[in-house]
Picture 1: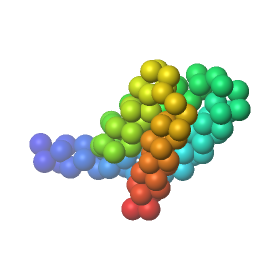
Picture 2: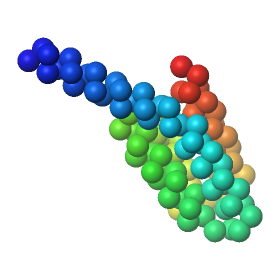
Picture 3: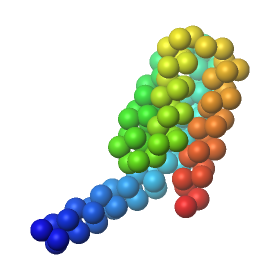
Picture 4: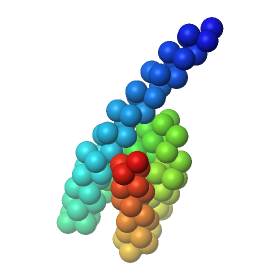
Amino acid sequence: MDNLSDRARELLEKQRHRYLSSLPEKKAALQEAWSQAAASGHQTELLEAVHKLAGSSGLHGLDVIQALAAEIEQMIKEHASREDCEQRFDALMAAIDVETLD
């Protein structure tokens, strides 16, 4: 059983590493969606991006990123002001930066 447990941990760690490696790309996509939402007023793409990030980051134990993304998602759904959302968005971008520095 120990070998299976060790192998499972190793596989999970590899998956987490791959996910962490993908964060800069996810951040760039979020920034693009944020800019497009600002320019067009349509937030569908941004809403989808933060929803996906909330789910995937939670699966990988990135609780701060998960919480911020979920909060932004809820704020968008509740039609919060852009300024309020922007504060949380900036915090999300910083949280992603912290995870990519480790």
